[in-house]
Image (cartoon, rainbow, N blue to C red):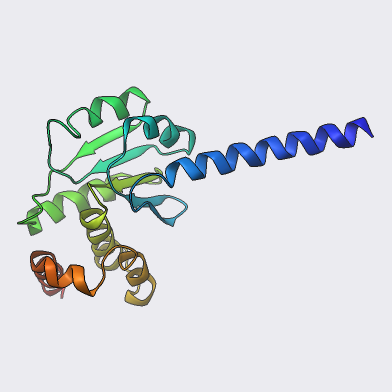
Amino acid sequence: MNRIVSRLALTAGLILVSVRGFADLGEIHNYHEVDDSLSTGGHVMAPQVPELKEAGFELVVNLATVQEDHNASDGPRIAAEGIAYMHIPVPWSSPTLEDLDLFFAVMDARADRKTLVHCMANYRASAFVYLYRTLRMGVSEAEARPDLEVVWDADAWREYPQWADLMKAAKARAN
């Protein structure tokens, strides 16, 4: 009987650890798991950084521009956890195909590393990941679009036409 209780307690403890890790990552603004090795999200706050390591992330790609009072220390904080960090500052008002090309190169080089792509609110990140998946990896529109629409809705596309323009330009260039 004691052996059964011990096993149940151990199993419950492991489940709680797993749930705790997931719940903490869920605190990242607009966090979204695309698949087992790729997630997108908004800004990662300092208390969430150790949770990235615990969840197995090996690479963080930040697409936000630097704001001294908000995210200037993200790189050193994430690297201190032993997680590779790449910063590609994509201006919100004027994303370019060159920004996208650099992102594609980083993603191509990531191999099988579990990766979080983030920005401030997951708009840049989800758009770039969508383009990478559809244009580079050959993922179908039907499969990739729902991951984009986790953040982007019709109002967002109307409010931020520069991002719709980038999507069109990237798709036209690929054809």
